[in-house]
Length: 116
Length: 113
Image (tube, rainbow over all chains, first blue to last red; front, top):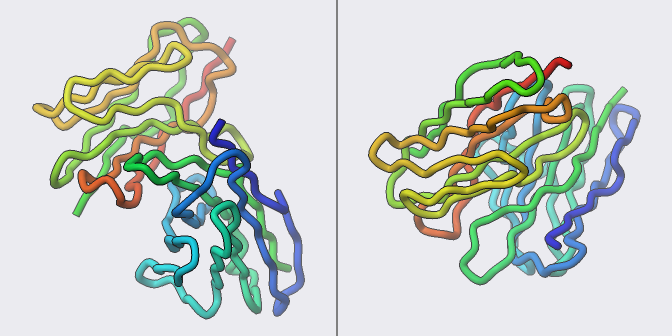
């Protein structure tokens, strides 16, 4: 149980284009989903927290107009990197948390984004 | 604010050796503590967790005990395998229950045959 999927697992795009990454909780309803960014050999940096049906809360320094997050249902959140540039190349990981007082997050397998 | 400090890696061991990865934390309230493992090219997997003082989390031969007096949550395994080679992250979630995870920087473990 508690499986989180991400799609695509990797994507290569041209500079200036937009890329959408999907995060799905497959066997549970996720009241809250999180988006992280991970640079090579470094820890995870929380980008934003999204609750179903409401606007995402972005961490300091994360551009909300560049990283658009939508949490339209209890099983799906999307991250859109708009007008991507090479410096946006990174490993993006989502996680999901159920309700009911638990604080355990279940992570997706990650999406490797390369912007040429 | 909350913080997690892990020993720097890489930790290099031979198969069947004993493993300890140190983790200490600073937090307000009564946080939950976690160990996550990340295999190359993959996302994070929850390895074990403990939600209150003196709790011991265990999974796949790994274990860690929540020590409030020393604010520690050290990861141990009695006999490592090559397949345990990965990056291990210690993390905490604030005592309020509905809060974000704070991660340590991760410790790479390399196990040789």
